[in-house]
Amino acid sequence: MALDLLIKNGVVVDGTGRDRFRADVGVAGGRVVEIGQIKERAHKLIDASELIVAPGFFDPHTHYDAQICWDPLVTCSSWHGVTSVVMGNCGVGIAPCRPEAREIATWDLVNVEGIPFDVLSQGTSWDWQSFPEYIDAAQRRGSALNLAFLAPLTPFRHYVMGEESMERAARPQEIAQIKAMVKEAVAAGAVGFSHTRLRQHIGYQGRPLACRQANLDELKSYANALKELGRGTIEISLSQEIDTLSDEEAQLLDTLLTESGRPVTWLSLVPLHGHVETCLETLDRIEPLIARGGIPQVTAHTSRLQLNLRNPFLMASLNSWKSLFNKTVEEQKRIYRDPKFRSAFREEMTRPQIFTSDWNRVDVDLASNPALKALEKKTIAEISRERGRDPLDTFIDIALEDDLATWFSVSMMDEDILAPLLNDRRTLIGLADGGAHVDLLCDAGYTTYLIGTWSRDKGVLSLEDAVRRITSEPAALFGFPNRGRLAPGLPADIAIFDYNTIGSTGRSQWLNDLPGGGRRLVIPAQGVEYTVVNGEVLYEHGRHTGAMPGRVLRLGAE
Image (cartoon, rainbow, N blue to C red; front, side, top):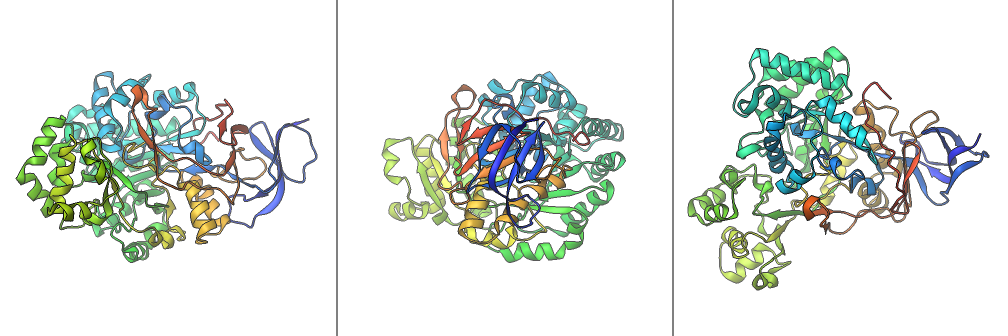
Protein backbone atom coordinates (compact mmCIF):
# COMPACT_ATOMS: atom_id res chain seq x y z
CA MET A 1 0.00 0.00 0.00
CA ALA A 2 1.46 3.36 -1.05
CA LEU A 3 2.27 6.07 1.44
CA ASP A 4 0.48 9.39 1.17
CA LEU A 5 3.76 11.32 1.50
CA LEU A 6 7.41 10.33 1.51
CA ILE A 7 10.09 12.79 2.59
CA LYS A 8 13.44 11.46 1.31
CA ASN A 9 17.03 12.07 2.37
CA GLY A 10 16.38 14.76 4.98
CA VAL A 11 18.24 15.47 8.21
CA VAL A 12 15.73 14.73 10.96
CA VAL A 13 15.63 16.86 14.11
CA ASP A 14 12.85 15.13 15.97
CA GLY A 15 11.90 17.73 18.61
CA THR A 16 13.18 15.82 21.64
CA GLY A 17 16.61 17.44 21.72
CA ARG A 18 18.48 14.32 20.62
CA ASP A 19 21.14 14.57 17.90
CA ARG A 20 20.06 15.03 14.30
CA PHE A 21 20.19 12.04 11.95
CA ARG A 22 19.64 11.41 8.26
CA ALA A 23 16.49 9.45 7.41
CA ASP A 24 13.36 9.25 5.30
CA VAL A 25 9.97 10.03 6.81
CA GLY A 26 6.85 8.19 5.63
CA VAL A 27 3.36 9.57 6.19
CA ALA A 28 -0.05 7.93 5.80
CA GLY A 29 -3.48 8.74 7.19
CA GLY A 30 -2.26 12.02 8.66
CA ARG A 31 0.40 10.37 10.81
CA VAL A 32 4.07 9.50 10.64
CA VAL A 33 4.23 5.75 10.00
CA GLU A 34 7.96 5.18 9.53
CA ILE A 35 11.31 6.93 9.98
CA GLY A 36 14.37 5.31 8.44
CA GLN A 37 15.33 4.03 4.99
CA ILE A 38 11.97 3.69 3.28
CA LYS A 39 11.44 1.81 0.03
CA GLU A 40 7.63 2.08 -0.30
CA ARG A 41 6.04 4.12 -3.05
CA ALA A 42 4.18 7.32 -2.20
CA HIS A 43 1.53 9.48 -3.84
CA LYS A 44 3.73 12.52 -3.18
CA LEU A 45 7.50 12.63 -2.86
CA ILE A 46 9.57 15.44 -1.33
CA ASP A 47 13.33 15.40 -1.87
CA ALA A 48 14.66 16.88 1.38
CA SER A 49 18.34 16.49 0.52
CA GLU A 50 20.30 19.23 2.35
CA LEU A 51 17.16 20.21 4.27
CA ILE A 52 16.16 19.84 7.92
CA VAL A 53 13.01 17.83 8.66
CA ALA A 54 11.55 18.90 12.01
CA PRO A 55 8.22 18.84 13.82
CA GLY A 56 5.93 21.71 12.93
CA PHE A 57 6.37 24.61 15.32
CA PHE A 58 3.87 25.05 18.17
CA ASP A 59 3.14 28.70 19.07
CA PRO A 60 1.75 28.99 22.61
CA HIS A 61 0.83 32.67 22.64
CA THR A 62 -1.36 34.14 19.89
CA HIS A 63 -4.45 36.31 19.58
CA TYR A 64 -5.98 35.04 16.33
CA ASP A 65 -9.42 34.74 18.02
CA ALA A 66 -11.10 37.07 15.50
CA GLN A 67 -8.65 36.77 12.59
CA ILE A 68 -9.53 33.11 12.00
CA CYS A 69 -12.94 34.36 10.83
CA TRP A 70 -11.41 36.06 7.76
CA ASP A 71 -7.96 34.49 7.41
CA PRO A 72 -8.07 30.67 7.43
CA LEU A 73 -4.34 30.62 6.55
CA VAL A 74 -3.62 32.21 9.96
CA THR A 75 -0.92 34.48 8.60
CA CYS A 76 1.72 35.27 9.17
CA SER A 77 2.38 32.43 11.64
CA SER A 78 1.77 29.81 8.96
CA TRP A 79 4.54 31.29 6.78
CA HIS A 80 7.12 30.48 9.47
CA GLY A 81 6.71 26.71 9.83
CA VAL A 82 4.12 27.00 12.59
CA THR A 83 1.56 24.19 12.44
CA SER A 84 -0.33 24.74 15.74
CA VAL A 85 -1.31 27.90 17.62
CA VAL A 86 -2.85 28.58 21.03
CA MET A 87 -5.19 31.59 21.15
CA GLY A 88 -7.45 33.17 23.76
CA ASN A 89 -4.49 34.42 25.80
CA CYS A 90 -4.38 37.27 28.33
CA GLY A 91 -8.00 36.93 29.46
CA VAL A 92 -9.44 38.62 26.37
CA GLY A 93 -11.53 37.08 23.60
CA ILE A 94 -14.84 36.99 21.77
CA ALA A 95 -16.59 33.97 23.23
CA PRO A 96 -18.92 33.44 24.93
CA CYS A 97 -20.79 36.51 23.75
CA ARG A 98 -24.44 37.53 23.57
CA PRO A 99 -25.46 39.47 20.43
CA GLU A 100 -26.11 42.63 22.43
CA ALA A 101 -22.57 42.54 23.88
CA ARG A 102 -20.64 42.27 20.62
CA GLU A 103 -19.65 45.93 20.63
CA ILE A 104 -18.15 45.60 24.11
CA ALA A 105 -16.20 42.47 23.11
CA THR A 106 -14.98 44.28 20.00
CA TRP A 107 -13.70 47.27 21.99
CA ASP A 108 -11.92 44.90 24.36
CA LEU A 109 -9.97 43.56 21.39
CA VAL A 110 -9.33 47.06 20.07
CA ASN A 111 -7.84 48.22 23.36
CA VAL A 112 -5.93 45.10 24.39
CA GLU A 113 -4.95 43.61 21.03
CA GLY A 114 -4.68 46.78 18.96
CA ILE A 115 -6.94 45.61 16.12
CA PRO A 116 -8.96 48.42 14.48
CA PHE A 117 -12.67 48.54 15.33
CA ASP A 118 -13.72 48.71 11.66
CA VAL A 119 -11.66 45.62 10.85
CA LEU A 120 -13.26 43.62 13.64
CA SER A 121 -16.75 44.88 12.82
CA GLN A 122 -16.46 43.83 9.18
CA GLY A 123 -14.48 40.64 9.65
CA THR A 124 -15.90 38.87 12.71
CA SER A 125 -18.55 36.32 11.72
CA TRP A 126 -20.25 36.01 15.13
CA ASP A 127 -21.67 32.57 14.28
CA TRP A 128 -21.69 31.52 17.96
CA GLN A 129 -22.81 32.54 21.43
CA SER A 130 -21.37 29.93 23.79
CA PHE A 131 -17.70 28.96 23.92
CA PRO A 132 -18.31 25.40 22.66
CA GLU A 133 -20.23 26.93 19.72
CA TYR A 134 -17.24 29.21 19.03
CA ILE A 135 -14.74 26.38 18.69
CA ASP A 136 -17.26 24.31 16.73
CA ALA A 137 -17.64 27.25 14.31
CA ALA A 138 -13.85 27.35 13.89
CA GLN A 139 -13.85 23.66 12.98
CA ARG A 140 -16.65 24.17 10.41
CA ARG A 141 -14.91 27.10 8.72
CA GLY A 142 -11.70 25.15 8.31
CA SER A 143 -8.14 26.28 8.91
CA ALA A 144 -4.66 25.87 7.54
CA LEU A 145 -3.27 25.30 11.04
CA ASN A 146 -4.25 23.39 14.14
CA LEU A 147 -6.11 25.69 16.52
CA ALA A 148 -6.05 25.35 20.30
CA PHE A 149 -8.26 27.62 22.41
CA LEU A 150 -7.88 28.96 25.93
CA ALA A 151 -11.09 30.16 27.59
CA PRO A 152 -10.47 33.87 28.35
CA LEU A 153 -12.09 34.99 31.60
CA THR A 154 -13.23 38.44 30.46
CA PRO A 155 -16.04 37.32 28.11
CA PHE A 156 -17.09 34.63 30.61
CA ARG A 157 -17.48 37.19 33.38
CA HIS A 158 -19.26 39.59 31.06
CA TYR A 159 -21.65 36.87 29.87
CA VAL A 160 -22.78 36.27 33.46
CA MET A 161 -22.43 39.75 35.01
CA GLY A 162 -22.97 42.19 32.14
CA GLU A 163 -21.29 45.59 32.39
CA GLU A 164 -20.88 45.17 36.15
CA SER A 165 -18.11 42.70 35.30
CA MET A 166 -15.90 45.73 34.60
CA GLU A 167 -16.64 47.25 38.01
CA ARG A 168 -16.68 44.60 40.74
CA ALA A 169 -15.88 41.09 41.88
CA ALA A 170 -18.39 38.34 41.21
CA ARG A 171 -20.86 37.21 43.86
CA PRO A 172 -20.99 33.55 44.95
CA GLN A 173 -23.85 32.61 42.62
CA GLU A 174 -22.10 34.34 39.71
CA ILE A 175 -18.83 32.59 40.54
CA ALA A 176 -20.64 29.26 40.41
CA GLN A 177 -22.11 30.11 36.98
CA ILE A 178 -18.77 31.22 35.56
CA LYS A 179 -17.01 28.16 36.97
CA ALA A 180 -19.61 25.90 35.36
CA MET A 181 -19.08 27.65 32.01
CA VAL A 182 -15.29 27.27 32.30
CA LYS A 183 -15.75 23.55 32.99
CA GLU A 184 -18.10 23.29 30.01
CA ALA A 185 -15.51 25.00 27.78
CA VAL A 186 -12.67 22.70 28.87
CA ALA A 187 -14.90 19.64 28.58
CA ALA A 188 -15.65 20.76 25.00
CA GLY A 189 -11.94 20.97 24.19
CA ALA A 190 -10.55 24.26 25.52
CA VAL A 191 -6.98 23.83 26.73
CA GLY A 192 -7.54 25.79 29.94
CA PHE A 193 -8.34 29.39 30.78
CA SER A 194 -6.50 32.72 30.65
CA HIS A 195 -6.43 35.82 32.82
CA THR A 196 -4.66 39.17 33.13
CA ARG A 197 -3.79 41.52 35.98
CA LEU A 198 -1.89 44.09 33.92
CA ARG A 199 -2.79 47.75 34.26
CA GLN A 200 -2.37 48.37 30.54
CA HIS A 201 -5.05 45.80 29.71
CA ILE A 202 -8.03 48.10 29.45
CA GLY A 203 -11.26 47.30 27.69
CA TYR A 204 -14.53 48.93 26.68
CA GLN A 205 -14.61 52.72 27.29
CA GLY A 206 -11.11 52.56 28.74
CA ARG A 207 -12.37 50.68 31.82
CA PRO A 208 -10.38 47.79 33.31
CA LEU A 209 -10.69 44.59 31.33
CA ALA A 210 -13.44 42.65 33.10
CA CYS A 211 -11.27 39.77 34.33
CA ARG A 212 -9.03 42.25 36.17
CA GLN A 213 -11.90 42.71 38.64
CA ALA A 214 -11.86 39.03 39.63
CA ASN A 215 -10.88 38.54 43.28
CA LEU A 216 -8.96 35.66 44.81
CA ASP A 217 -12.09 33.67 45.64
CA GLU A 218 -13.08 33.75 41.99
CA LEU A 219 -9.68 32.68 40.73
CA LYS A 220 -9.52 29.83 43.21
CA SER A 221 -12.91 28.59 41.99
CA TYR A 222 -11.95 28.71 38.31
CA ALA A 223 -8.64 26.98 39.09
CA ASN A 224 -10.61 24.31 40.99
CA ALA A 225 -12.55 23.68 37.77
CA LEU A 226 -9.36 22.42 36.14
CA LYS A 227 -8.46 20.30 39.18
CA GLU A 228 -11.90 18.68 39.08
CA LEU A 229 -11.49 17.90 35.38
CA GLY A 230 -7.88 16.81 35.78
CA ARG A 231 -6.70 18.72 32.72
CA GLY A 232 -6.01 22.15 31.30
CA THR A 233 -3.42 24.91 31.62
CA ILE A 234 -3.72 28.45 33.00
CA GLU A 235 -2.15 31.37 31.16
CA ILE A 236 -1.93 34.66 33.06
CA SER A 237 -0.44 38.08 32.39
CA LEU A 238 0.91 38.34 35.91
CA SER A 239 3.87 40.65 36.39
CA GLN A 240 3.39 44.41 36.42
CA GLU A 241 7.17 44.85 36.10
CA ILE A 242 7.99 42.51 33.24
CA ASP A 243 11.55 41.75 34.34
CA THR A 244 10.65 40.40 37.79
CA LEU A 245 7.88 38.96 39.95
CA SER A 246 6.79 40.63 43.17
CA ASP A 247 6.15 38.67 46.35
CA GLU A 248 2.40 39.23 45.97
CA GLU A 249 2.50 38.00 42.37
CA ALA A 250 4.51 34.95 43.37
CA GLN A 251 1.91 34.19 46.04
CA LEU A 252 -0.86 34.33 43.43
CA LEU A 253 1.12 32.00 41.18
CA ASP A 254 1.49 29.61 44.13
CA THR A 255 -2.26 29.78 44.76
CA LEU A 256 -3.17 29.05 41.14
CA LEU A 257 -0.78 26.10 41.03
CA THR A 258 -2.18 24.72 44.27
CA GLU A 259 -5.85 25.25 43.51
CA SER A 260 -5.66 23.89 39.95
CA GLY A 261 -3.03 21.18 40.23
CA ARG A 262 -2.21 22.16 36.66
CA PRO A 263 0.58 24.09 34.87
CA VAL A 264 0.46 27.89 34.89
CA THR A 265 2.39 29.82 32.25
CA TRP A 266 2.78 33.49 33.07
CA LEU A 267 3.88 36.71 31.44
CA SER A 268 6.57 37.64 31.43
CA LEU A 269 10.30 37.79 31.92
CA VAL A 270 11.75 40.40 29.57
CA PRO A 271 14.82 42.49 30.49
CA LEU A 272 13.12 45.62 29.26
CA HIS A 273 15.43 48.01 31.05
CA GLY A 274 18.58 46.14 30.10
CA HIS A 275 19.03 44.16 33.32
CA VAL A 276 18.88 40.47 32.48
CA GLU A 277 20.35 39.79 35.92
CA THR A 278 16.99 40.80 37.42
CA CYS A 279 15.26 38.16 35.31
CA LEU A 280 17.78 35.48 36.26
CA GLU A 281 17.49 36.37 39.95
CA THR A 282 13.72 35.99 39.63
CA LEU A 283 14.11 32.54 38.09
CA ASP A 284 16.35 31.48 40.98
CA ARG A 285 14.03 32.96 43.60
CA ILE A 286 10.86 31.25 42.35
CA GLU A 287 12.47 28.01 41.17
CA PRO A 288 10.25 25.91 43.49
CA LEU A 289 7.17 27.38 41.76
CA ILE A 290 8.68 26.73 38.34
CA ALA A 291 9.35 23.12 39.32
CA ARG A 292 5.63 22.79 40.07
CA GLY A 293 4.70 24.09 36.61
CA GLY A 294 4.75 27.89 37.01
CA ILE A 295 6.56 28.58 33.75
CA PRO A 296 7.42 32.15 32.66
CA GLN A 297 7.33 33.12 29.00
CA VAL A 298 10.22 34.93 27.32
CA THR A 299 10.64 36.51 23.91
CA ALA A 300 13.06 35.50 21.17
CA HIS A 301 13.68 38.92 19.70
CA THR A 302 13.38 42.62 20.32
CA SER A 303 11.32 44.00 17.47
CA ARG A 304 11.17 47.70 16.92
CA LEU A 305 7.68 48.69 18.02
CA GLN A 306 5.50 50.94 15.91
CA LEU A 307 3.59 53.66 17.76
CA ASN A 308 0.84 55.96 16.54
CA LEU A 309 -0.75 58.44 18.92
CA ARG A 310 -4.23 57.78 17.57
CA ASN A 311 -4.07 54.30 19.12
CA PRO A 312 -1.35 54.55 21.78
CA PHE A 313 -1.45 50.98 23.12
CA LEU A 314 2.18 51.16 24.19
CA MET A 315 1.19 53.85 26.70
CA ALA A 316 -1.74 51.98 28.24
CA SER A 317 0.14 51.32 31.49
CA LEU A 318 0.58 55.06 32.08
CA ASN A 319 -2.21 56.67 34.10
CA SER A 320 -1.71 59.97 32.30
CA TRP A 321 -2.77 58.36 29.01
CA LYS A 322 -5.95 56.61 30.17
CA SER A 323 -8.24 59.42 28.99
CA LEU A 324 -6.90 59.17 25.40
CA PHE A 325 -8.41 55.79 24.54
CA ASN A 326 -11.58 55.46 22.44
CA LYS A 327 -11.70 59.20 21.74
CA THR A 328 -12.02 61.07 18.45
CA VAL A 329 -8.87 62.53 16.93
CA GLU A 330 -10.03 66.04 17.83
CA GLU A 331 -10.58 65.04 21.46
CA GLN A 332 -7.17 63.40 21.57
CA LYS A 333 -5.47 66.46 20.08
CA ARG A 334 -7.03 68.65 22.76
CA ILE A 335 -5.63 66.39 25.48
CA TYR A 336 -2.18 66.22 23.86
CA ARG A 337 -2.00 70.03 23.81
CA ASP A 338 -2.96 70.32 27.49
CA PRO A 339 0.08 71.30 29.64
CA LYS A 340 -1.43 69.31 32.55
CA PHE A 341 -1.34 66.13 30.45
CA ARG A 342 2.25 66.75 29.41
CA SER A 343 3.27 67.45 32.99
CA ALA A 344 1.67 64.19 34.20
CA PHE A 345 3.31 62.25 31.34
CA ARG A 346 6.69 63.80 32.15
CA GLU A 347 6.36 62.83 35.81
CA GLU A 348 5.49 59.22 34.96
CA MET A 349 8.46 58.98 32.61
CA THR A 350 10.76 59.34 35.63
CA ARG A 351 9.79 55.78 36.68
CA PRO A 352 10.50 52.57 34.76
CA GLN A 353 7.59 51.74 32.46
CA ILE A 354 6.87 49.67 29.38
CA PHE A 355 7.65 52.75 27.27
CA THR A 356 11.29 53.80 27.11
CA SER A 357 12.44 57.08 28.60
CA ASP A 358 15.47 57.16 26.26
CA TRP A 359 14.50 59.41 23.35
CA ASN A 360 17.49 58.13 21.37
CA ARG A 361 15.51 54.91 21.00
CA VAL A 362 12.47 56.63 19.43
CA ASP A 363 12.54 57.77 15.83
CA VAL A 364 10.07 59.09 13.26
CA ASP A 365 9.28 56.12 11.07
CA LEU A 366 6.66 57.51 8.68
CA ALA A 367 5.05 60.94 8.43
CA SER A 368 1.97 61.81 6.38
CA ASN A 369 2.55 65.57 6.35
CA PRO A 370 5.01 66.36 3.50
CA ALA A 371 6.54 69.08 5.66
CA LEU A 372 7.67 66.40 8.12
CA LYS A 373 9.19 63.95 5.64
CA ALA A 374 12.68 65.25 6.36
CA LEU A 375 12.30 64.00 9.93
CA GLU A 376 11.88 60.33 8.96
CA LYS A 377 14.54 58.02 10.44
CA LYS A 378 15.72 60.74 12.81
CA THR A 379 15.50 60.15 16.56
CA ILE A 380 13.36 62.33 18.81
CA ALA A 381 16.53 63.24 20.72
CA GLU A 382 18.13 64.49 17.49
CA ILE A 383 15.04 66.44 16.37
CA SER A 384 14.63 68.03 19.80
CA ARG A 385 18.20 69.32 19.64
CA GLU A 386 17.56 70.75 16.17
CA ARG A 387 14.37 72.45 17.36
CA GLY A 388 15.78 73.54 20.72
CA ARG A 389 12.81 71.91 22.45
CA ASP A 390 12.30 69.36 25.21
CA PRO A 391 12.21 65.80 23.73
CA LEU A 392 8.83 64.94 25.27
CA ASP A 393 7.25 68.10 23.85
CA THR A 394 8.93 67.45 20.51
CA PHE A 395 7.50 63.92 20.38
CA ILE A 396 3.92 65.11 20.94
CA ASP A 397 4.28 68.23 18.78
CA ILE A 398 5.38 66.19 15.75
CA ALA A 399 2.27 64.03 16.10
CA LEU A 400 0.04 67.11 16.36
CA GLU A 401 1.67 68.67 13.29
CA ASP A 402 0.71 65.50 11.40
CA ASP A 403 -2.91 65.27 12.68
CA LEU A 404 -1.70 62.32 14.84
CA ALA A 405 -0.91 60.30 11.69
CA THR A 406 2.84 60.00 12.33
CA TRP A 407 4.25 56.55 12.98
CA PHE A 408 7.09 56.37 15.48
CA SER A 409 9.48 53.44 15.84
CA VAL A 410 10.67 52.44 19.31
CA SER A 411 13.63 50.20 20.17
CA MET A 412 13.10 48.96 23.72
CA MET A 413 16.37 47.07 24.43
CA ASP A 414 19.51 45.53 22.98
CA GLU A 415 18.97 42.00 21.74
CA ASP A 416 21.98 40.07 23.01
CA ILE A 417 20.85 40.33 26.63
CA LEU A 418 18.12 37.79 25.81
CA ALA A 419 20.59 34.92 25.31
CA PRO A 420 20.62 33.58 28.90
CA LEU A 421 16.81 33.44 28.98
CA LEU A 422 16.55 31.60 25.67
CA ASN A 423 18.97 28.96 26.91
CA ASP A 424 17.29 28.51 30.29
CA ARG A 425 15.03 25.44 30.42
CA ARG A 426 13.00 27.09 33.20
CA THR A 427 11.42 29.39 30.61
CA LEU A 428 8.96 28.94 27.75
CA ILE A 429 9.70 30.75 24.50
CA GLY A 430 6.52 32.50 23.41
CA LEU A 431 5.11 36.03 23.65
CA ALA A 432 4.65 36.23 19.87
CA ASP A 433 1.17 37.82 20.09
CA GLY A 434 0.34 36.71 16.53
CA GLY A 435 -2.83 38.44 15.35
CA ALA A 436 -2.57 41.26 17.90
CA HIS A 437 -1.01 44.75 17.86
CA VAL A 438 -1.29 44.77 14.09
CA ASP A 439 0.00 48.34 13.84
CA LEU A 440 2.55 48.06 16.65
CA LEU A 441 4.74 45.04 15.93
CA CYS A 442 4.84 41.61 14.32
CA ASP A 443 6.66 38.93 16.30
CA ALA A 444 4.93 35.97 14.63
CA GLY A 445 8.21 35.07 12.90
CA TYR A 446 10.03 34.29 16.13
CA THR A 447 10.31 30.59 15.24
CA THR A 448 12.38 31.12 12.11
CA TYR A 449 14.29 33.91 13.86
CA LEU A 450 15.20 31.63 16.76
CA ILE A 451 16.66 29.03 14.41
CA GLY A 452 18.23 31.39 11.89
CA THR A 453 19.63 34.05 14.20
CA TRP A 454 20.06 32.52 17.66
CA SER A 455 21.08 29.02 16.52
CA ARG A 456 22.80 29.34 13.13
CA ASP A 457 24.22 32.88 13.29
CA LYS A 458 24.95 33.40 16.98
CA GLY A 459 25.40 29.82 18.14
CA VAL A 460 23.52 30.53 21.38
CA LEU A 461 21.42 27.38 20.99
CA SER A 462 22.16 24.20 19.08
CA LEU A 463 19.75 23.41 16.27
CA GLU A 464 18.38 20.50 18.31
CA ASP A 465 17.76 22.72 21.33
CA ALA A 466 16.18 25.49 19.26
CA VAL A 467 13.76 23.06 17.64
CA ARG A 468 12.84 21.42 20.95
CA ARG A 469 12.15 24.85 22.50
CA ILE A 470 9.47 25.65 19.89
CA THR A 471 7.99 22.18 19.38
CA SER A 472 7.77 19.54 22.09
CA GLU A 473 8.15 21.93 25.04
CA PRO A 474 5.13 24.17 24.36
CA ALA A 475 3.05 21.29 22.98
CA ALA A 476 3.52 19.23 26.14
CA LEU A 477 2.81 22.18 28.44
CA PHE A 478 -0.60 22.64 26.82
CA GLY A 479 -1.49 18.98 26.97
CA PHE A 480 -0.48 17.71 23.53
CA PRO A 481 2.54 15.43 24.07
CA ASN A 482 1.93 13.80 20.67
CA ARG A 483 2.45 17.11 18.87
CA GLY A 484 5.88 18.71 18.56
CA ARG A 485 7.74 15.42 18.01
CA LEU A 486 8.50 13.24 15.00
CA ALA A 487 7.99 9.55 15.73
CA PRO A 488 5.96 6.72 14.20
CA GLY A 489 2.31 6.92 15.20
CA LEU A 490 2.30 10.66 15.92
CA PRO A 491 0.49 13.36 13.91
CA ALA A 492 2.42 14.41 10.81
CA ASP A 493 2.97 18.11 11.51
CA ILE A 494 6.29 18.84 9.84
CA ALA A 495 8.46 21.86 8.99
CA ILE A 496 11.10 21.29 6.30
CA PHE A 497 13.65 24.08 6.04
CA ASP A 498 17.07 25.09 4.80
CA TYR A 499 19.23 25.70 7.85
CA ASN A 500 21.52 27.93 5.77
CA THR A 501 18.80 30.41 4.87
CA ILE A 502 15.97 30.10 7.42
CA GLY A 503 15.08 33.35 9.15
CA SER A 504 12.80 36.34 9.51
CA THR A 505 15.23 39.19 9.25
CA GLY A 506 14.74 42.83 8.41
CA ARG A 507 11.98 45.20 9.48
CA SER A 508 8.31 44.35 9.40
CA GLN A 509 6.35 45.23 6.28
CA TRP A 510 2.91 46.80 5.86
CA LEU A 511 0.10 44.91 4.13
CA ASN A 512 -3.35 46.35 3.39
CA ASP A 513 -5.15 43.02 3.56
CA LEU A 514 -7.40 43.30 6.60
CA PRO A 515 -11.19 43.48 6.17
CA GLY A 516 -12.17 46.82 4.67
CA GLY A 517 -8.62 47.40 3.45
CA GLY A 518 -7.14 47.84 6.91
CA ARG A 519 -3.38 47.53 7.16
CA ARG A 520 -1.15 45.45 9.40
CA LEU A 521 2.49 44.71 9.99
CA VAL A 522 3.79 41.34 8.80
CA ILE A 523 7.19 39.68 8.69
CA PRO A 524 8.04 37.42 5.70
CA ALA A 525 9.75 34.07 6.19
CA GLN A 526 12.90 32.78 4.54
CA GLY A 527 14.11 29.24 4.07
CA VAL A 528 10.92 27.33 4.98
CA GLU A 529 10.60 25.04 1.95
CA TYR A 530 7.62 22.88 2.99
CA THR A 531 5.06 22.91 5.79
CA VAL A 532 2.99 19.79 6.40
CA VAL A 533 -0.09 19.80 8.65
CA ASN A 534 -1.78 16.53 9.61
CA GLY A 535 -0.04 14.80 6.74
CA GLU A 536 -1.01 17.29 4.00
CA VAL A 537 1.40 19.72 2.35
CA LEU A 538 0.22 23.23 3.21
CA TYR A 539 3.08 25.30 1.77
CA GLU A 540 5.53 24.32 -0.94
CA HIS A 541 8.45 26.71 -1.52
CA GLY A 542 6.45 29.50 0.11
CA ARG A 543 3.30 28.95 -1.95
CA HIS A 544 0.01 27.78 -0.49
CA THR A 545 -1.06 24.49 -2.06
CA GLY A 546 -4.77 25.15 -1.51
CA ALA A 547 -5.03 22.60 1.29
CA MET A 548 -6.74 23.46 4.58
CA PRO A 549 -5.65 20.52 6.76
CA GLY A 550 -5.80 22.15 10.20
CA ARG A 551 -8.16 21.05 12.93
CA VAL A 552 -9.30 22.22 16.34
CA LEU A 553 -7.03 20.63 18.96
CA ARG A 554 -9.24 19.45 21.80
CA LEU A 555 -7.82 18.10 25.04
CA GLY A 556 -8.43 14.41 25.34
CA ALA A 557 -9.28 13.95 21.67
CA GLU A 558 -5.81 13.41 20.18
